[in-house]
Image 1 (cartoon, helix red, strand yellow):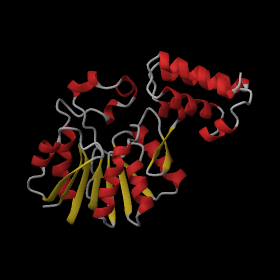
Image 2 (cartoon, rainbow, N blue to C red):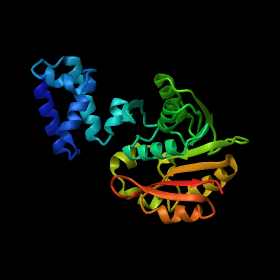
Image 3 (spheres, rainbow, N blue to C red):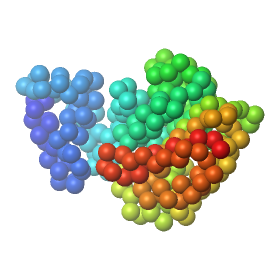
Length: 270
């Protein structure tokens, strides 16, 4: 079997299973099985498929058909131009979170705290894009191990602390966060890839999805330096509720993503 034939076979299997983007997924999985990139597959489409590659490819296809996200199979996801390692212990980075990076860069600050860092994409990116002193926290020790590995591989200087939200006696010029914001009642509406495979701790925040904001915003008031900024990602339909929580803050702004949905809440310490 050639690589081209393997791609077509994988594409058909994924199509029959109702997997989205079956051609792209087949390419990514076969390239991963061969430890190559997608461009290499096209340049070598008539090459024979090595047996070891076929064994890995078949396993990856089965995992994807069973609902495992492609990123957990390959162990990586691109974010802000860099490849980050991801595991089932962390949320898969979404492109919408790059809006948070842009907002944070505009706010600036010499000290930055990333609350609920997960895979570390925000903390690592800000550490590499600025000269700021960056600290990141997470309640999950497993997530912190992934974040620490990403920082080490990408050469980012980040201090990691295992704690719930904000460490004691620590102030910063800028606090950023992409917290859990899915309502528990919405669990059944999520894609099975998300519902069954991504960590619940990073997804759900009470009955209305606002539990973390209710704790984070007051805590940030005391943890920000004068004129400091808070930048948070929010879920669809949460702009009014989060805006109300920030009513005493200065310069409150809700920015939309490319789909026109409210995505980033920005506010300056009152």
